[in-house]
Amino acid sequence: MKRAIPLLAAVMLFVLAACSPKPIPAPTSTLTATPPSAPAQYGAVTIRYDANGGSGAPASQSVTKDSGGIAKYNLSTAIPVKDGYKFTGWQLEDDTAHDYHPGQYIANDTGSAAGDITLTYYARWDTADPPTPPVSNVAIQYNGKDMSDFTMAIGSTVQLRVIFFPIDAGVTPVWSIADTSVATVDQTGLVTGVSPGATKATVTIDGVSADCIVRVKGG
Image: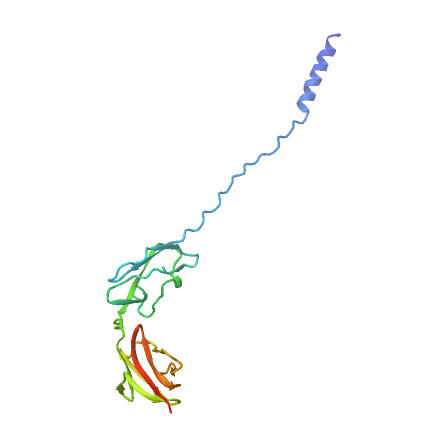
């Protein structure tokens, strides 16, 4: 009977161990990272220039549409050339109702944010104005007649005129007089006698001159 006690103790320990609550493992969870969504892809717009018979068309440029399908850009400031013509602006493809000038800001509604497109601007030309011929045939007149020498009294006035070719040259005559102690002249060509003597009145137009002797008599 002395050996039964340890055996009984062993059996009790086994029963207690079997009946003891086992630890419950902590729940595990797996987190799956969601990749960020890819940015929306908007279409590219290529702006192309056609010199339309001329030369020196600007280089093409490219912009990206915004989410509303709007392409925003400034036209090139470069200007093409064409012999015998003057450049008047750019025309967008078949849009004949509008002219666009170099450097102009454009916000073009392409209708869709997706897809690549090309916009072509064509040079507009007009017949060039003929060059203005140089001034020539400058002459001084008085009362409708060419005048190269005249006599006047002290205190009197003489209205000189100038004629030249071409008459629409868009230049302004400049009057002067050599000796203002004898006579004076204003910028309309009005000569006034001051004292006895002789001097020279000159009118200059675009570098071309004509002279007239002015004689002032006393008394």
